[in-house]
Image 1 (cartoon, rainbow, N blue to C red):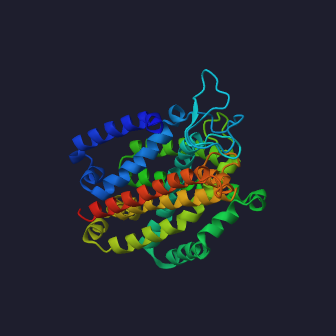
Image 2: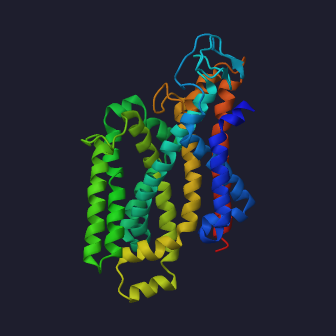
Length: 377
């Protein structure tokens, strides 16, 4: 009961979200249709639980996830503090690990760490895959052959092995992740610049405004994220986080490219695409404003699934000690810390493993629900 009570902000947020979602479901498009899908609703509930847990983690945790308290090493779940102070929470709800850190707080804060990286890195991977997949599928020819060859080259390596190699210290010391960041992080700027230019080509004032804002904000963020040279410090990324982030984007981009390319090759034969060509619309306008919106169903489903795959990859890296940082409370590191005690204590490893499993399960169920509802459109 005490564990359930700690998640009170999450329960309140879930109730408010679903009340509003059911109330306005007719106006919420594909998301609103999820309210009528039992599988999708279960998946959405699990995913939102962890999203709200990450958002309200500071209010849920009972201790600093890195703090070590005397007498709490390998303590059983629900054990009281050995030397309690007046302001401290009196129990280790899920017990303590081998370094006397609170497992409950580390699992809760681990949700924030995972959801900081997985969705954002997947978005960047989609920007890369869409920007390259659209022209490859639409134009075909040598461009398609060249880009497909590069994608197949990356996909030929086992994903876990490739991901593992990209974050090893020896590779990091070569500066390769920074070179990858310099290339991969430019794609969102290119994507949105082409998007606004093609949409507002006949309205130069609005086009120049939107493209100008994109370039200013884009290169400002680019300088900070890729090279850590943002003078304001607003856009910056820890070197370890950059290595993991870039690795996720690089590994996922070829898969997104193949999906987008296949969808474009199918959709470009539709009548409305031929009508756009007859009206004299530019190729990029047709790709971004005619073809891409009609491919959103499969892409949304793949986006959910890919976040789940990324979550597993992040957990794998953390388990092997190649995550964001050795002391990070991410689930993979927490499972690794607890596995040494499995013959004696289960809770340090089982609790974060169940957390990781539940989030991936929720994302898969959500993807199934989205796929089911998108097919009805």
